[in-house]
Amino acid sequence: MTIHTILKMGDPRLLRVAPPVLAFDTDSLHLLISDMFDTMHSVNGAGLAAPQIGIDMQLVIFGTDEVNPRYPDSPPIARTVLLNPVITPLSDALEDGWEGCLSVPGLRGVVPRFARVRYTGFDQYGDAIDRTVDGFHARVVQHECDHLVGKLYPMRIKDFTQFGFTEVLFPGLDAGDDD
Image (cartoon, rainbow, N blue to C red; front, side, top):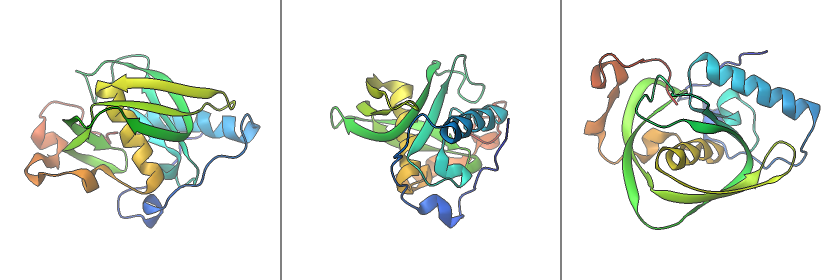
């Protein structure tokens, strides 16, 4: 088990576009994924992208089997490993929702995201993934995949009166490093 350091906003590595994964089902990929889950769980994250730990590859993980203390009103999402993702909005409908990020610790902001999306890609074994999701699940996958193209959620905020420190905006909520 290795807990990786999570890069913080301002680090230029977070602004790079990640290349696709070319080799699946390798020992090094399985170890990286295990380490990413350990890292994500160590800070109660809802997701983590490889670029957030300085690894340039199109790999995101997300989900928990239980309610996340940072998002207590959101339903659990099945643990997912997603490589080389493609997100397709299923309508132009957007939903505003609060987001935080492990790379932007202690802050939250309201971000518009597509309400319903289809995402495709591969799991760590190279098996195809094709899911249609909405709500919190759609928000999380869009947030994580943004990291693969060098975007952090503050870049998507439209109203900066709805951006601030978690401890001020949500007294009593676990104000740790969100994602």
